[in-house]
Length: 160
Image 1 (cartoon, one colour):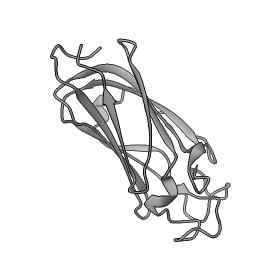
Image 2 (tube, one colour):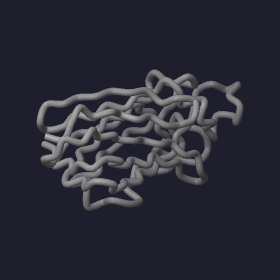
Image 3 (tube, one colour):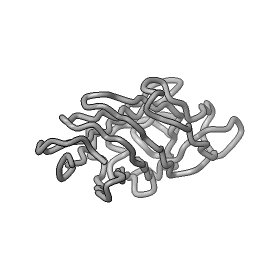
Image 4 (cartoon, one colour):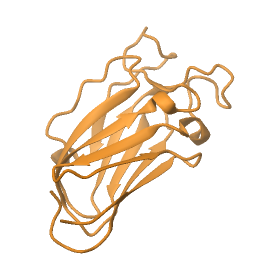
C-alpha cells in the first residue's frame, strides 16, 4: 500500500558494474511511501545471459560475492539467499520512504564469452533485456526491462 497522494510515482533501478561487487541501486524516486512490496530482478532475458556468481568455484568466473544489502537495510526485513548461478531474486521491501534508496551488492557474471568486457565484468549494454517487477501490497504490479544504459524506470499508477 502506498501513502495517500495523487502524485504519479516512479521507481528506478540502476545496475552498476564494479569490483569486487556489482550494485543494483533501487530508488523510490517518487512522492509516495511504499509500505510493503516485493521487488523481483530477473536476469534471464539479459542480452549476455547474466547470472549471480555467489559461490567460489561455482558457475561464475573467478571472483564470487554474496548477495548483500550495502545501504537501506532498514527497508529489507530479510536478505534473500541467492544461489550460485541463479538468474532471479525476490526482495521483500517494507517502509520504503519517498526518495529513499537501497543498494544491493552481488557479483554478476555473463555467460557470453565474447562480451565487450569478458565474462567477469558486465557492460551496461549486457544487462539490456533483464527485467524488474515491483509488486505492491495494494495489488499494483509493474514490470520493466533494463535498457542499454543500465537503468529501468517503473512508472507506478498512483499513490493510494
